[in-house]
Image (tube, rainbow, N blue to C red):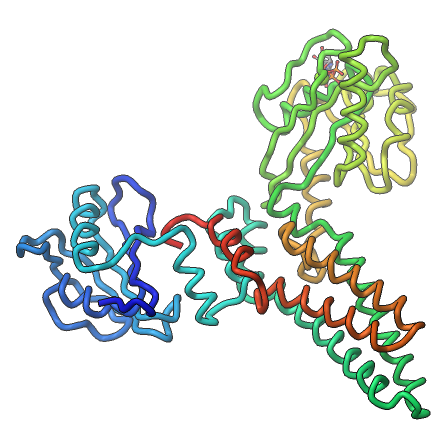
Length: 445
Ligand SMILES: Nc1nc2c(ncn2[C@@H]2O[C@H](COP(=O)(O)OP(=O)(O)OP(=O)(O)O)[C@@H](O)[C@H]2O)c(=O)[nH]1
Ligand SMILES: [Mg+2]
């Protein structure tokens, strides 16, 4: 059935392993038509029309009665002839049909092999293939939205626009190389230069934007403050579980306690940290060092202040950045403190111990919305994109330096930057990179 030069015909369970009402088995490859005909002992159904068919084992026993879909290439997901079998979802049915398909010369798909075939047949580019993996794994609404936009080409479009701008600059540089003595090249050189500068500036802004990676991995929010102000109580109230130990002893928390929570359709990783104070205890000192480091790299800091001890504001303001959130905690104990929030920070009151944290939740949701609304789709949703973007920026920086010496060297560096963009969408990428991308998929995708 499958010739040695043709890719083999593959099948895999697309639904989770185990018992379910329905199990979907996918088939793809040039041998799909023959296999489906023999499995159903029936002519092929009309393309993309669901029909009910009995499926037969080799000796003629009926192994299931299933919904069958025949999707001939090239207008299928993989671009190849494909079929889908919606089986009764028992282990025995799945085993019976799988055995028959192997007898018919099919083999079990590798992880990500369906999507890889779609990529190789030009049905989607590499960023869209990655989006499928993200969509399958999406747990928050934000992750789902981002994956769907990326699947629709939102990320590829950003890289294609930069690639186009560089190709324009490259054309100008090549004119300069071809006509070195002309008068025109001065103006041409200036246009090329400003084109390269514009792309460089945009790339720097894109690299500084962490939204895409944060939507996938969680926005990072540090809870910091002096000992005993109620940081761990706040974490527990926001997470709605006893994630961290709370006691009346100052210096209870030592490690960073990271807890993912779901908020405003996004994943947020909250980190409770050790109380900030000078100490001779080496364990606590290490805790304070980690607290400061985590806070510095966080997307947002919640500085907790104990309203019964207004001086605890001073312990935290030095570590806060503009728009960070001050929480005046223990609002149940005192109502007459005159402590003032610095103007560059926002503030809310809370009673962490009683779980009264609605204002904090609202503040965080507002901050998350600000991140998403009205902004361009991020250019980086995975470290693979970041690495290649940095590479492109490096080539461009060298290209811009070379421009003073001559167009030829500059052109070579711009060409390398163009190549980096092409590798993001998978236009030109070594096999090993593709292997790495696709093996992170699950089987059946
Ligand atoms: N009255 C009142 N007490 C609170 C509130 N929040 C926390 N506490 C109390 O304050 C004490 C310290 O709370 P923790 O949450 O452990 O404080 P922390 O900031 O994590 O302390 P360290 O880990 O030692 O830095 C405990 O006795 C809590 O019961 C609150 O809103 N009101
Ligand atoms: Mg604590």
